[in-house]
Image 1 (cartoon, rainbow, N blue to C red):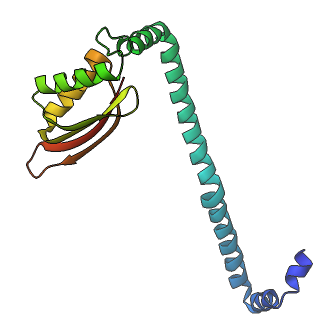
Image 2: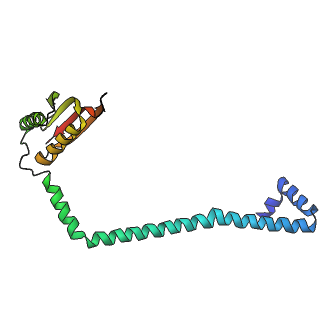
Length: 176
């Protein structure tokens, strides 16, 4: 392979130019080539490898710390997971069907001071609702109360800001 490389015309020219240099220049060029080669090895291979190694070690330590924390708090996590998983789904006030859902949504919107511009059933256990130019805080509070008090799920939501600050128009799909 080295023989083939030496037979290349461009390499032959470089070797001829190198041989014509004074001995001192040849030594300086050799030292320079070795220094560049070592620099390339360091910056292209060694340093990225060591940076990757340091990052992998720190990620492993973080994962080990997280695992230790999860293992030490396993009972609390299970308890919170069980408690959090059942509060929204087995609500006492959850509507039984689409008609009850429609009645609940219209009455709760009225109680929250929101005017439903349009509403229609969406399948058996869902309802589409349009609200125009309402205070965002009122809409958010109403949706939160539907979720926490009645277990209503926000299936789809699209809100557009109004020209007045703090007011929105919303298109919602709410489901049991």
